Structures are given as C-alpha cells and as structure tokens.
Image (cartoon, rainbow, N blue to C red; front, side):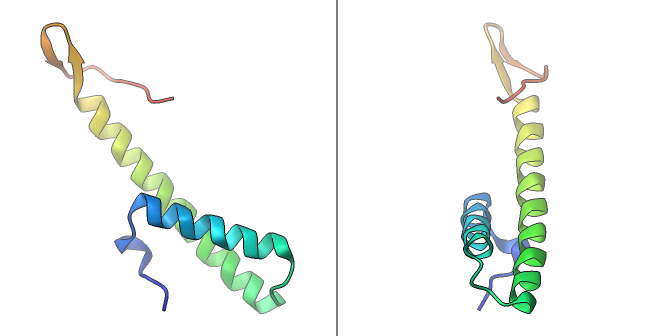
Length: 77
C-alpha cells in the first residue's frame, strides 16, 4: 500500500520518486501503469520541492553571525 504523500518525509518521498523513475526508465510497465507512476511521481516531486522550500525558509530565518542569530537570508547551494 502506498503511503499518503503528505505524510512522507523528504527522504522517503525522494527515495520513492527515484524508484518510480527507475521503473519508468526500464520500459517494463504497461501504459496504464506508466501513467499512474508518472502521476504519483509528479506529486512526489511537488512534495519534495515544497519540503525544500520550507527548509530554505527556516534556514533564512536562522543564520548565525558573530553577534548571534541574524535574520538575514541564507542561500543553500
């Protein structure tokens, strides 16, 4: 049974997305299965992007400086 996407951690969603991509790339899935895999993959991708966006917002709020915690923006990557 597939977990509800909203309940997945970033890591779990990314792992499932990688598995779906591998299944699609193998060419072994039927057309209907491929469409279902693609649809879930798109939802997982959006979920991962949202998790990353929220993490970036948290990091932007907590940036250490010599004077202590600063509220300036930090960029990851």
